[in-house]
Length: 371
Image (cartoon, rainbow, N blue to C red):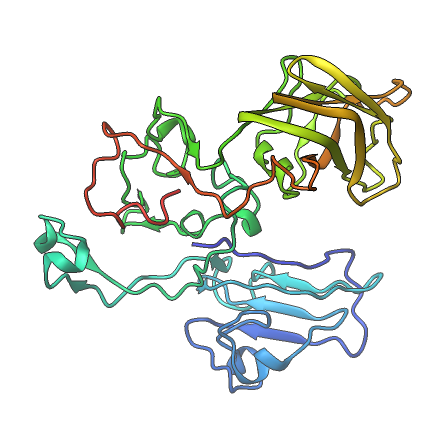
């Protein structure tokens, strides 16, 4: 379950006359009560999405205190976007003075899952032969997807806004033992069910319907999180390192007559731009062009003559007067005499992986959504 999140300021206590103390008793409170005395305590605290009526409407002010009843387990999630003032903190108090209940309050972000039901047939669980031993229940949580698979997260330690839905849910049994999410292969650590070292490793490479090969020239490298293929159509700008001498290679499946080449720079100010671009065809330097380093549009350069070739190299050059040794390039291009960009995909592309040893399901939809 999500951990309980508080946003508040605690400084030296100096309440003003208008400060209010609100009492919270999750076990015996009522959201329709006054909330300003132990006998009229609310069930939910302000900031809890399950709060109704008065606690849902109240906006905490500098000097206010939200006091939770000691010995009572408060279940829920509280998120506050408020702040106190100098000498007037907003305090969430777990019965530190012992006057409201017995002992300290217990703040618990989990809740008990009820309403378990037996599975009625194997069809309900994807044909699982053990369907008669399986039960299910609905979980009242927002598990909508808010992640992008190209932004790969190692495990739950990533920021919440970048976690996949299954990374935001913990299940525990009555003895507080973590129950791992069902997956294959079985995770080595149920607390981190998505560690990459637990995944299947395939010796087969991910293939693409793109007809050419795109790769960094030997001695050049870039970041792994952005596909270098995007540089052919102007997608997410990949890193090219080093800034001086870094090169990207496009190896075409057949020779093409090249009349012009082009480059589109990625121009946020924090990324230094190359001063020149050198264009090679089949190992021969054909042209070196000076770049307008402030330009955000495609810069095109006409070659002195038409050149046929299959291996195109785009090499960055810089005088070396910057401490940063890498940059980002938005797009590279190579044009025929009629203006056709021969390295840009002509239609939408597909990536695929064929591994008959590990990916053995016959159902064509079985692996839909696989991560």
